[in-house]
Length: 157
Image (cartoon, rainbow, N blue to C red; front, side, top):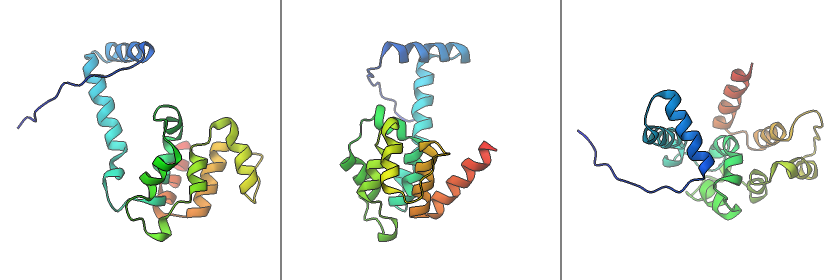
């Protein structure tokens, strides 16, 4: 049973289109196949956003993974991200503070400076992204956050 398909219009930069065309050529598929693949891949990664059980600190691992895209591509504002994380009647134990949401949206070049102001355990030997993950993991200690952190640690070894 085939679903009805829709034609959409998409505005992208030439450099992105060139990259898509090169990727399609390398895979010996059509350009439209790469766009569909990218959309399906993204929707699978964001699947937890469609589940009511996932809210607040449960979503932090995903937000940390896509932190650069939140800042650069989506240009989310802190109130938008607050509503994404805490908007679904979040359980008080899972509530993410606005100050931590602001950290997620802090540009890379300012992140270490912001962490030094709020974290009691300064960590000069780690990069700011790792420090941010450790800080949020310690603060929220969500089981899903712990599982995601363990998986990332294992995959990097």
